[in-house]
Image (cartoon, rainbow over all chains, first blue to last red; front, top):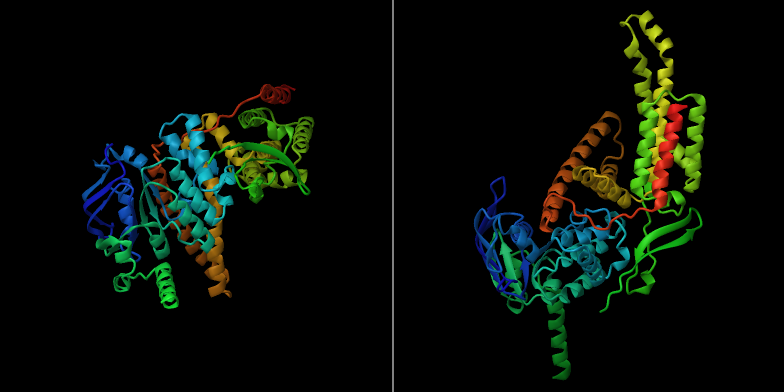
Length: 257
Length: 285
C-alpha cells in the first residue's frame, strides 16, 4: 500500500442519536510518520473523531482514507490492521482471562501462525516493560500497568498508525513520564487526543485544536502550544514545559547577558 | 534489545497455604523476576501444587461430569454408598491440600436451593390436594427428600473440587477445548474478568450513599439500592458497547481465537477411567 501510514479525513460529519452534532465538517490530513496532537475541550468531538479512524463508527457524511484506501465495509478489516486505536479506559480493552491472552488477541485475529503470535506478544510486553505480568489477569493490575498493557495489545499488531485517546489521563507523574517516553520511542504515524499539554509538547511536532465538532486551529507545536490566547479560547492552557523553558531561557539570558 | 521470554512455573512455599506454583515470565528487571498473582478470595487455592491440581482440567471436568451424572441418574443413595462417596471426596480434598472446612462450608451453598426443591417433591405424588392425600404422599415419598438433597450436595462438592483446583483461565481454556459454545465461554470469561470492576463500582456508590445519607434505613434504603442496581446495569451495558468496539478494533469476527494448547498425560486418562469405574460401582452395587 503506497504511503501506508497516512490519514485523510474529508468533510466528516456525525450526529449523536439525540441529534447533537458531534462533528460538523472536519478536514484533516496526517502524513506518514507525523505526530499530531489532537487538542480540545471536553465534548469537542475528539473521541468521536478517533472512532472514525478504524471504522468503529462509519461516516454519516464525508470520507476517511487510510493509506489512500477509503474506509468502508469491505476494507474495514485491513484498515484495522493498519490503524491501532488505544482507548481511554484500559478496562475496556483488557477483556480476556490473562494479559497474555489479551495481547495475543490481536495477532491471533490477524491469522498469524502461533509461533509468530507468541513472539509478537512477548516482544510487545517487553517493550512496555511488563513481561512479568504476562500470566496475571486484568483485575490484578494497577491502573498504570493496565494502561501499558492496553498499549501492548495494540503494539502486538504492529500497526502503521497509532491513534491514542488520552494515553496519560489519571496516571501519576512517574507513570506519565514513563508512558510519554514509551510513546516517544515508537516510530509510527501518531494521532494523540489529549488534555496533557506537556505530552503534546514533548511528543508531537504538530497540533490540531478541535472545538464544537470543527477544527479551530492547525499548526506546528510552536505556533499552537505557545499561543496562550488561542488555547484559553478553547478551554486549554499552556504546557508547563514551555512556560518553564521560557522562564529558564529568560533567566539564562539575564545571567549571561 | 534481545528478548529472552521465558515462562517459568516455580514452586515456592508460603507460610500459610503451602507450596504454590505460579506461571510467570522474567522481565529484564531482575527485581520483578518472581512477581505472581495475589488472587481474589475465591481462587486462593487454585495455584497450589498437588496431584489434583496437576490433572489436565479437561479430564477433571469430564471426570466430574461422569460422577455427577452417575450419581444423579442412579438410585437414591443408600447409607453405605453415601459414606463411600463422602470418604472419596474428602480424600481428594486432602490430596489437593485444600482445607476440608473451606470446601465443606462452600458446598453448603447448594442446600437452600436443593431443600427448596426437595421439600416440595413429594407433593407431586399426592392424589389430589386434600390434607390426607398430602400427608400420605409425604410419608410414602419422604426418601425423595433425602435423595434430592444428598445428590445435590455430592454434585456441588464435586464441581467445587474442580473449580478450586484449577486456575480460572485454564478452566476456561478447558471448557473451550471441550467444545463449549464460544458464547458461553466468552460470558464466563467476562464474568471472571469484570466482576471485580463492578464490585469496585458498587463499593464506591455505597461510600457515596454513606457519605450523603448515613442515617438512611429501611424501605428507603432498599429503594435506593434499586437505583444503584439500575445504575450499575446501565454502566455495564455501556461498557459492553465499548468492549465490543475494542474487540472489533483488534479484528474480532465473532470467534474467540485460541492461543496455547492443553496437553494431556497418560495419568489424566486414568483419572477419568477411575471416576467412571467409581460411578459404575455406586450405580450397580
